[in-house]
Amino acid sequence: MSLDQTLDWRKADLPLPRQILTHGGQATSIEEWDQAVLDWVRHQDCASAQVLHDLSLGLSRLQADLSWRAFYKIAAAFFELLDHRGASKSTSEKRLVLQILLQCRGLFAGVAGPDQNLGLGLLRHCERLAPNPTGLPLWGALQRSWSVMAISEIENLSKADLHSRELESLLAIWTEAPMFEAAIEAASLAWSLALYTEAVGLNELSVFSTQLALGLQWGGRSASPEQTKVLAAAGQHLRMLLHQHAAGLDPKPHPDLLVSLQDLVRTTA
Image (cartoon, rainbow, N blue to C red; front, side):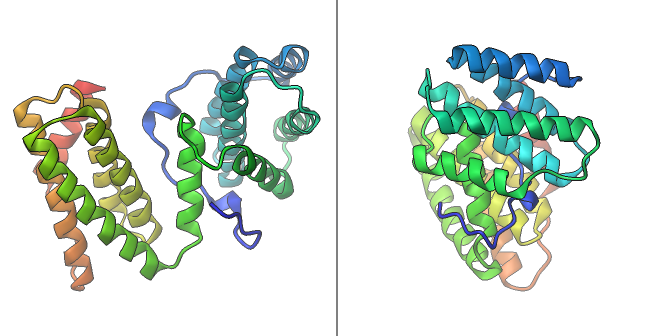
């Protein structure tokens, strides 16, 4: 990911994997944030970074304002990185944590929006220290959302077509020899398709892609033969829907197949 200052991260509120957003923690007062930041400043360890990560996600979920919601997702990704790296003695990271606390004070005081430069600084810090987001699911999701914002509609559709073809092929192989690694790779492609399709306004396809990604991610290890067929059929259907859009038609996911995916997600999550 290459950060472009002409892109406004405050609009980067694309869907994130649900297993990330279910992490706990809701700080209802600035005093709770003060204590959590104080604990991190004292110890600068994984446990205190994890607390701040969860508090950031909890605060993001509570925000009606898009810019505050996006800011706390970025803050959570930053704390995810601190947790992943372990003990930190970085002066710059300490300064960023204290600046995030200052933003919290502004939010609780009713300030209209977060500091755009701080959000960009947090993104740059994560990009510099973790260009490869392996082991960092939230940071990886933000990287993908930023990349989607940076490319045109034609490029988004081109990438969606490429990924749908790769997904269909991978699922065909997976149905013959189900391996969890292949299911995870397919889930990653489906997540990308959810981002690309939402970026061009194909919201129903994005919802369908998200359900497919969740089904592969959670059910890929132990899917029954019938569930495997549902996932493979969904991959084929998604590619067909993209072809319909390219032909000028209005693509609508088959409701029965969408329900089957949702049921699969509910039973495997």
